[in-house]
Image (cartoon, rainbow over all chains, first blue to last red; front, side, top):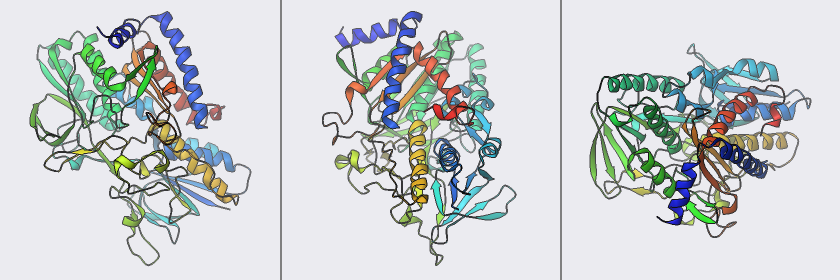
Length: 40
Length: 474
């Protein structure tokens, strides 16, 4: 299995893990906020 | 006193009107009028859930008039038929069949698309055989047909489902992608997935293109692209695909396609949701002598020309060619935003079948991108009213694309792809390697995305009803 495939499988495995997704919600929210600031 | 008319009340038009009302508040007796074919605003991104019966259409809508009454905007429920840019008025057909002339000093055309089902024989829920989730009535009808299909499957029938684009020049592949994923996951939850073959049928040159030439992003130091992610996802979901295809015709039982290599295919189906080609709303532009100058004001699809660089071949198009102020070059008091503005060209590689059928996804200019263009147009009008040159820009080559593609609507077991790219249109003048700022691009599958999607639904509906603090929501 390629590295990238393995990483996607890992993302898939944790896609509904509540703790990880809470963390990702914060990280992605901050990233969205950064991108929004570029537009305004 | 300035009279400003906004034609259309979707993301671009409605937001532009709110921005105008706010920016001109207390600065004189200016008059803002919105003309809209429908008396409601619809949060279109959530129609994907309406289309499988997980949400009622009313939950995606609110009445425009009470909002406009609150912020001092006039509202006319009617269809704009003609614009007279020399004499500065719009001819509006009212629901009772009468017409009204609405005069303006400045105008923003934000009409949204005309859904060109006629472009493909047999396409569409009204005169054809396929379904659509482009409007609340269409999505409601699609849900009823889908739930009928589910009943058949519960009785033991095996079915074929086709979802994607219904014309080689269609856009909004993202909405169809969300729909196919939601259908898959709904059937999994109902224990019926093994009774359906699901096919993704699209005009995209590659999986994950989405009409924006795909996207790249870094994850843990490795560079990924959307083609790899969508292929992975479709493999996990057991969804087959046929891309680079134009739909020539649909009948009661089959969808007839041709691809870029000239391969013709007849696809049997029990249920199909295919997005039509988007054209401009049929509005005539008439000069002071009564001449039809529509061809001068619009591109061949009818979208209004703005400050873009038109006429370049796809290979030469770059970021600086995309419009920045959304001002018409001939009539400086005319602006166009959202789907209504004419893009300088496609974002995705245009192709065609050997028989000449176009297989060229049109660039999406919806949602957040539409809002940004509407806001720029509105603030540029404020500039002009106050005696300045337009100074506000929102080029698709200088603004981010934010998209949360729902795969399953549930706050506990849901999933979505969270996508953030910068900029939307590749800009190799600014970012020579990929045309995008890769460290600022992200795509990720997970429950967090489902929370975002839910949050955005409520945040946008709150903001666009101009409720207290609405301006704090970007």
